[in-house]
Amino acid sequence: MADKRPRIVIVGAGFGGLKAAQLLAGTQAEITIVDRENFHLFQPLLYQVSTSELAENEIACPIRAFFRKNHNVEFLMAQAQGFAPERRVLLTNHGEVPYDYLILAAGATTNFFGLQSVEKHAYGMKTLQEAIAIRNHVLHMFERANKCADEAERRRMLTFVCVGGGPTGIESAGALSELVYGVMSQEFHKLDFAEVSVKLFEAMDKVLTMMPPPLQAEAIRVLSGERCVDVRLNTQVMDYDGADLKLKDGSVIPTRTVIWAAGVKAVPLLAKLGTAVDRSGRVVVGPTLQIQEYPEIFALGDCASFVQDGRPLATIAPVATQQAAVCAANIKKLLCGDTQLLSFRYKDVGSMATICRGHAVVAMGSWQMKGFFAWVAWMVVHLMRLAGVYTNITVALKWFWNLVSGIRLGRIITNIKEK
Ligand SMILES: Cc1cc2nc3c(=O)[nH]c(=O)nc-3n(C[C@H](O)[C@H](O)[C@H](O)COP(=O)(O)OP(=O)(O)OC[C@H]3O[C@@H](n4cnc5c(N)ncnc54)[C@H](O)[C@@H]3O)c2cc1C
Image 1 (cartoon, rainbow, N blue to C red):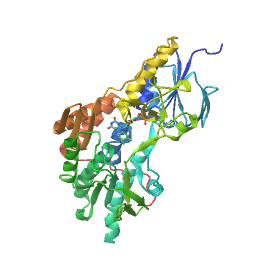
Image 2 (spheres, rainbow, N blue to C red):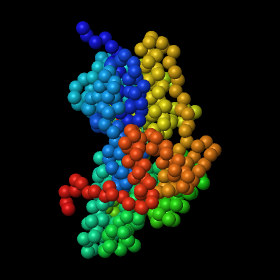
Image 3 (tube, helix red, strand yellow):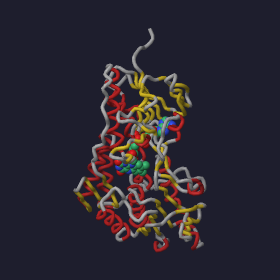
Image 4 (cartoon, rainbow, N blue to C red):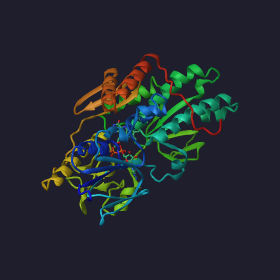
């Protein structure tokens, strides 16, 4: 006899999709999670993989591992490519996946703002593969510079530029500076570290725009002071050919490393639905997180455009997880024939960013904190959100050992063709 159980398909097992699947796993529905990767990724710590502090399996966890006990949850490793909404079918590179309810939780991708040369030569910081590529490249630059007799080329290899003054840019610049001046300077005995520089460029006149001005100033003070990062505001990148970075004011920075953390936009998949999208390509959802034309389709997190108090919500993890809870609750109601659905309202949980080892900034409503205790708070929150006890223990140990000794043993170069 054919299975009459309702089919719920979730595209994306990031923060939002995973939470929705966990909340729906207890229903009688058949749930299929579709993701192009076989792992859930903890994106806020990507920069620690790129700077050799954590290993990849400490911030990524196999999706199937979350649903060992849920026999009604199936995982399909596939790339979602389009929709046939009139037939209620998701199109993937591994065939059609029929659904009764569809949750779009496919996240976002790096926004290079149309700068094609930058997109070609700079490193994005959005996927695990990109973080590993940055790690390989940065470590390799030191090995190459160590063998290079040409001073100009050596300086180019030893100049590291992060673009974007949001949490990712700040955290990457701080962690890179620690790697360079705290670890590499102890081990590369022949290199002159006056030739090394870490730079942070931001197009606006401030960093960490979601933080109050005193915490923005604190981030700049710590980075440019004790961490020796060259922080430049009102500095816009125009072009990059892999060797020279051109700025809007006409100046040129010779560098082999540009890490682009300047913004995100929606994944291209969403445009295939043909419904309304916002300026970043995020699909517009109503108060119940449904798409107006197709009420059986929900969208959440970075790929949904939800306006609250006149402004679209930010692309941050708590928005995705809070929306996942409302999506799951609404689908449960629909499964029971209840059409009185919940409306979503984001509850602000504040924001935090770490500047370097032992130093962070935290803002929650009117409450602000900076320095060591803010860093401890940042550490506890991130440890609680990481998947699994094993990871909690290894990451906590690594952070503690890194705090007291500064050692980073993740400095392993893989996948470099030219040695
Ligand atoms: C470097 C970095 C640092 C960050 N730091 C913070 C932070 O400190 N605090 C914070 O709150 N937020 C932070 N964020 C933002 C936060 O990670 C996102 O807001 C959050 O991940 C959004 O969750 P989501 O479920 O919408 O999408 P995601 O978590 O991005 O998950 C999307 C999933 O969809 C999959 N997918 C995408 N396209 C397809 C497709 N076509 N087919 C199949 N699968 C697909 C992806 O593989 C992925 O698993 C950071 C983001 C980055 C990149």
